[in-house]
Length: 71
Image (cartoon, rainbow, N blue to C red; front, top):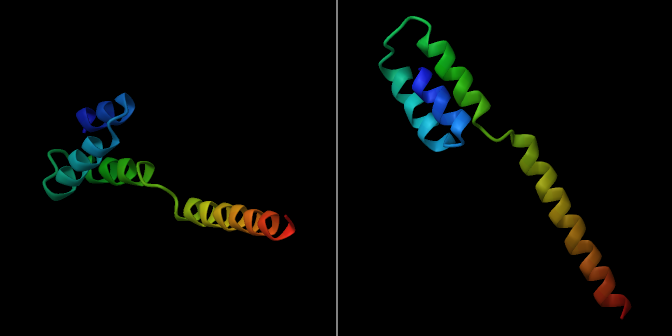
């Protein structure tokens, strides 16, 4: 599990997620599943962030449309 955390800290989130998923299937220590689940939770983009991004894109499109209709 330490190797997965080191990968995440080094910035390689994809490899860390793969290592954590392997540890969920075949844990080598009793605390590994809990730590792997925590690593997977921290390495996932929150769903609310996608909503904010969609709202910002909609706002940008609205501004462009308003600017295009004014001129």
